[in-house]
Length: 563
Image (cartoon, rainbow, N blue to C red; front, side, top):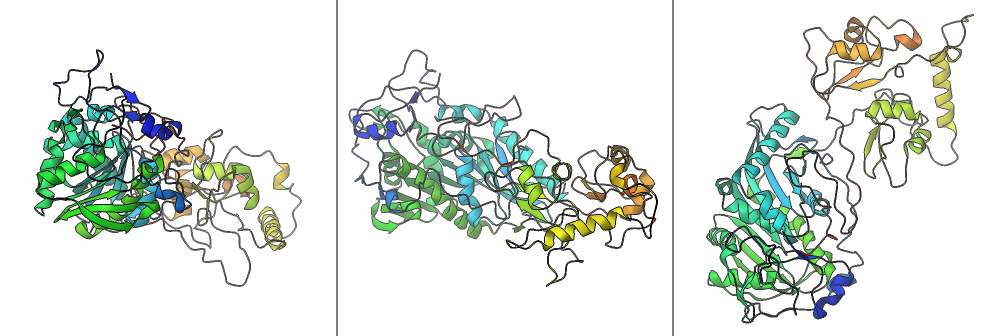
């Protein structure tokens, strides 16, 4: 049974008030703990007074983050940059990849696997990432679940294989494979890295980034002597980095947990084993961090920061932005690009807003917006929005989610300008009327057919054929072929777009593509998954879809500073 500590003791009681949980490190074993001889085990320890330790060096108490005006545990969201939303394609956790690119012609792509706080890390990652794929994994508040999840080599090998399969699907390149690999963690996530580095797949790891994220137990707590057995994988990697063969970035705060060694004590131990010594270095850094000492040797870099408060711990996530910069320079990953939107050839400058082709304009959902308010904004219907974006009734929109707008949507003009509404009304009148006068009843007087609006664009999903799509929209395969300029030999791929003929609403479908030119199915990125809900401090996230993997935690920096 893995134990979690909720306080730092009297000296750090303010952290407990803020809800900063700590999973226990090796110390005094309890009856329900696994055997201490097991190298994967981190037995529980009772909370005690915080130690200063003999080998930790000087630490600083000041919580410098307060001067920045930003809470490091809840930073503003910069958006997704060139990246798609989170996908559950991996066997564990979730991943983001560039909307386009990020993979070479030979199928090579670079990968970062991050443990603990995936959503908070994503906010920093997208600021500097230009093609690297990111997998985020959250398994709980303590390091125990991270040790357990990768106790066997098969778990990490399966994860890599699932990411390669997803990149092969996205790119259409069956040779997709990981070229360069980095493991990163914040807080408790280091437990997984310790396991992976000792496995065969660990030989593929080129870089390790530990953001206030490497702890140890005490062999003799009274003397402050570390139990160094669990640190050996990191020491081996640090030696290779110091020799210039690998890259290892390690940061630590001045937080002193009770009953086990802090990140500061562990950092001093590793540097000492390499024959080095941290030296005084003053530097202002991200999210209010203030460096006071560091050590650099070839590819091994260690930095110590002031602060013993919860936000001082969260602020280390901000270092991810610079870590990605270093990896970009080291790897030169295949470049990626963001979503590409088609231009409306009918639009002319100075003519005001025009009715658009379906899918050529998108809307990014803002906080508090609903389908109804968005439909009203663009003068379309809720049903049209749902159909084009494959939305299920009852599912709430998430801030940052991108919606494609249907044909006929009109971008809003400046306040007080009613021309957009007039243009929309005129367009509807033109579509509803026939050439010349007719005694036929208006379309609106007829019963509405159970099909989607004319000009509807269907995004092809895996396994769908022209026959299935034709049946769904009550048209014929020949009509789909003619309307989209397709031949029977053309094969549809997931993400392609097919324009549905409007024959059930406006009458007979045209014998050839319409004037605005619905061309052959255009490849497009599969609809993005809704963005994860905003993280709630200390709350677990939804469990992964696969029942064969451990449940994921909330991935928020508010979760825990954990052993």
